[in-house]
Length: 272
Image (cartoon, rainbow, N blue to C red; front, side):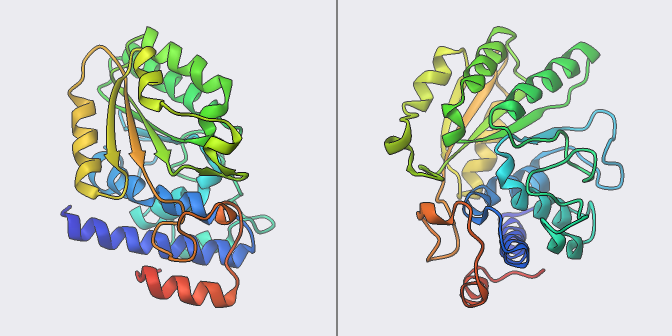
């Protein structure tokens, strides 16, 4: 898929995120919008997957370790054809399968239930190890939020990934600099991220997380690294694509109202 088509898919996904969180009256649009371009490249360009057979043997896997980014995951799966787009608009409603955090048992394409920060990373290591043991060439991709790096479990997981030399594992950091309580540096400093992952034996790549070509190139590089896992540090903008949401911690967990939705949709465009 060429870059123009990927851009179109990204606009559609951003529109879905805004509509779903508005309909729910809650959710996490800021961090969902910041990782949209990364997920778009993974699902429409990179991963070996089949929406008609979500549990296909030998498939690549994606784990949304920052489980509050569920709106982005739900919308990219819908855009990819795992289920009808209209279903996502039941986000967080009673009896909806689209809960506030991803549920593996309910949603096709969700590889593991996440929400407790750090646990998705550890689960992805089990997946990568299992593929190695089974002789599968599949890759596992896991997305972490930068605030998530404040969890101790993240560094236990990094230690294990480096120890086992999991070159079939790519960790992607959604580095938007903000979390629910404000700037990372004001809550608990997470930098230097690159040096920390290098200390655990990772190959580290830094990219612009909204530049589709840089995302593609980073993923390509990670596939060519042998004997160690790769960490891609993707510099992103929280609320990317919506002017009044960008770089605003207040949009970490707040849904747009009717007026805000109208303005946001006019800015992102797309179809849903």
